Image 1 (cartoon, one colour):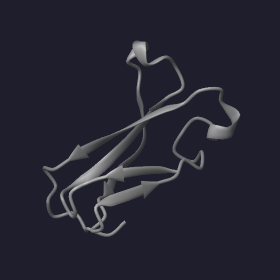
Image 2 (tube, rainbow, N blue to C red):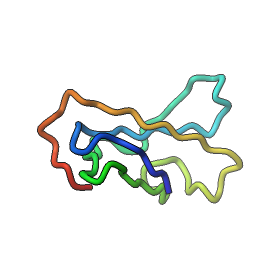
Image 3 (tube, rainbow, N blue to C red):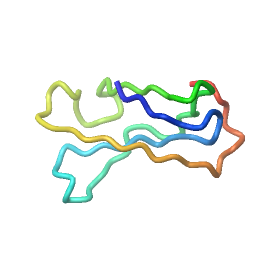
Image 4 (cartoon, one colour):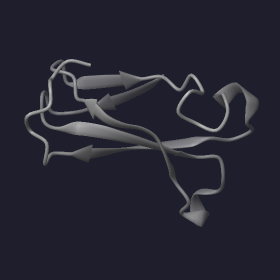
Length: 78
């Protein structure tokens, strides 16, 4: 599970992943427009549905979360 710290109710998150070296700079979007939680942290779990394969079947996987604060009207519950 990926736990992302955030300011409550401030925009949406986009989770990206790569199964390659971080040096390649090749990222794919696993899930977009995740409303940030009103609690100060948002949880997201990689179940394989938004990625190429389930994380248990790959040797290495890196994640990053991008915060988009331009959508301040997004719901604050995840």
